[in-house]
Length: 441
Image (cartoon, rainbow, N blue to C red; front, side):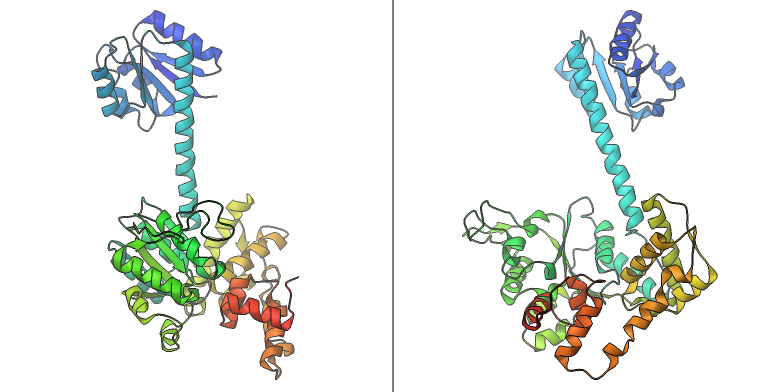
């Protein structure tokens, strides 16, 4: 039940409004002045309805005193100027006396709904910050401290950033950290995994398209780059872009222009670009697979993320943070690792990096019979044994190795992760699947 405080010095109006709100199932408290209202504990209410003219101090004084609780100002001195003054001071809304009962209830419900949505957004932001602590990347090892230092130095600029690192090292988390500390933090951050978009659709996805530009284009689309206007565009696995898409992206960086597929008009955009890849772009430049001019446009500031095996001092801190996060998500008790589990976590090689650590801990919570996570729950010895199985270590042809590797690991990784571990593009993985007849079960 919503708690509403009525601050009105005229007793008959105070009683009448109280009865109206009670009939509509609101919980109501009353006061005759700002001083009396303060004694009620202003932050404990969902909404305050205050008369403009009150003894001692005007009702608008409650706007600052009650923050962040919304204040609805009502007055018999109905005028445009008084409405403007109240709204300028931060009133949630303004209603004139004598008020219409239906109008009053509609206004109250609208303000309460708006406040509820604002509170939900704040709670969601807190949850996201908890799950993705972008302003404080976990770890105190020298390598991660260097990453944090670079993030802080580059965040306040509009410089393009290239993030390098193995799959699962936290490239998107780093991009979010840069955006969160930038002057564009209140604007959108649009994240795109270039490897997950089919090559024939990448241009329309990025740059947008006009209705009828190609088969299936039933309506116009402004594209993801335009959606990032005034904010940050994060292109993960940028090495998977076609040369044609690279040329268009270069124009965006140089001229701030995009052109939708099927359109002759240019559209100006203002974006900050952050790109990431696990591939060696310089090698791709030499092989004519990546544009040299785009590479140097991207690589103004380079941030290389260390693999987890080079961050041994951070593993336990990361594991405990992930364990706490997942316990909260699953609404279960706070779990702890036993000594053997801690030893296994610190000794394991972690080829899948932090992402693999998250997956292992999530699975261990599901398998655990109590609040203590054991080495058996983690199952790292079995995972290591599977990796070194004779089927993969024997002398095999490239095709045989490919078949064995894909069949062995496809149940654990999605196509993007699998292609990353094979050192090929997602498209190349799909083509070789077709050629060798390997279907995903």
